[in-house]
Length: 86
Image 1 (cartoon, rainbow, N blue to C red):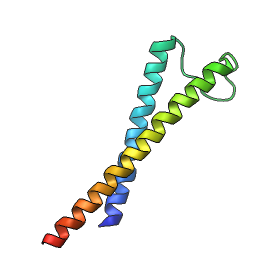
Image 2 (image 1 turned 180 degrees about the vertical axis):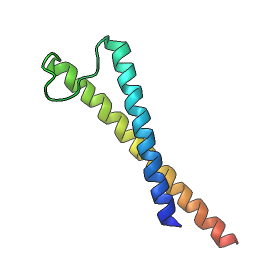
Image 3 (image 1 turned 90 degrees about the vertical axis):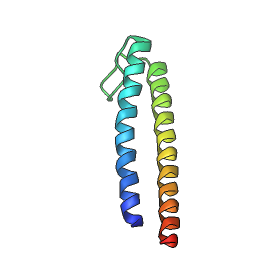
Image 4 (image 1 turned 120 degrees about the vertical axis):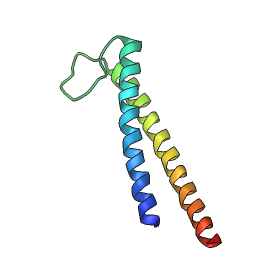
């Protein structure tokens, strides 16, 4: 059953990552008025802007990974406790 929870945690993490990417892109566009810097051929974007976007995006991704991992571990622990009771 641990494999199930790990796969479920990975799926939730991927889904949360997708939602977070859309959220960061939307907030970036509303805040700066420009589209988020993407790709290596986007030379119109300043280095400062690209670095700021990378920092914000990677921070949000790291937070989501930690939260998803902790939630998965809690679910595994909770399920193990209920298995011991039954």
